[in-house]
Image (tube, rainbow, N blue to C red; front, side, top):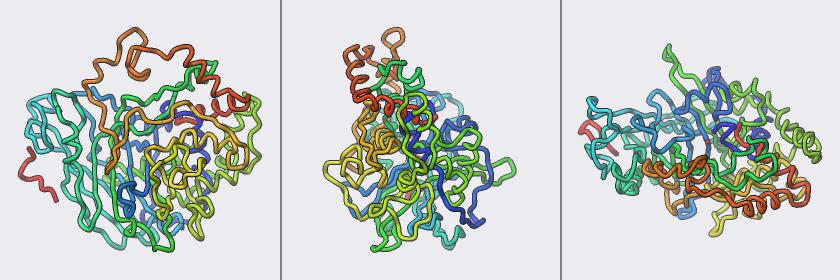
Length: 502
């Protein structure tokens, strides 16, 4: 998501996560230099939304604790009514999810998604020509299929390749209640079982990230009154979800920690592939990496992240907050943030002999809890962020509090007053909420100045509510500064016979 789609607090945390890796790579799967970046906050990727990764999630499956679920989202800010050319995955892209299971900063497993477009009738402008009741309904005029390839790596060289999914159908955009009267049925049909155990899903979903982005209106209205509204409410994303037996991802039972990051490659005019997006921990490239290096960061690889270390150890955001709000920033270098975002936390999710590298690290031996806490590890819930990332984890608040020194004993209670997603997540794979319907857009505006971003209900927060939110954020003097820092830290979010399904 763009810098304007993420709260500054989460951004700072991500930025700190971005730097601090040791160089150590091999050329075989090394990304080509390409001027693009993860999220809209980087100059070039903002014009390539189909290739723009917004978030990566990884967690031990709550209903199947012997499996691990991984989710990669892309294409931010999908307006549900955005027809006639609704949303799809790019057919000229390779969407990759990398898994490092020995802590050396290089991928050992690579899951690669590729997509194909299918059109039944080119003589109409319609996405669907009637109500769509199944993924194979002939009234679904445009649809996509995908393959997943599993590549085993050694020193970034492929040692084996295997198709684990082929010609699977993608869940379409949720056009509206007339076009797709029972969208849940389409979602259910898009979940496929994989040989050897596991499940896969690809399709549209409600954007699971939640936060308030109005920090850009002179820091929440100039008086902290503009907080408490989920700026991503009503928007969708394209999601890839994969659930696999945990034993197929880890190095061994004695080394259960895995690291994950995503990349997107786009085919160039001469037929080569160039990396245009990269994402591991949330919000890394939005605020910590300076503008001149944003495109460079997302064309790079984790084993080369030593070049960005200084931005993590001495984050600009913390210095700006001290300058503007007179709240003293923690002393540098920030080794606490290096642990959270680069190496993993000792005795939690740090693998033995770890090489610092920006990725999302998950200790798969920590079982899920029946009552997840939104602040994860900071609230004593070790199954949550920064140990992996669950859909319900409030990474903006967690990151903001960490950047302001929570792990150094500087206790704070900063946040943006958005504590959960506007839609409830599911209890089984793929867990993502159903995408928002195009039908809902008719209620987007009920009065002048009222928009879907404001909730689309025609009702603005009361002055009492605003005062309560502002007061809560500012309580204690220092908290006001921290909350502001957190906001600035936000991201700178019937089938043809020839198609065969396995």
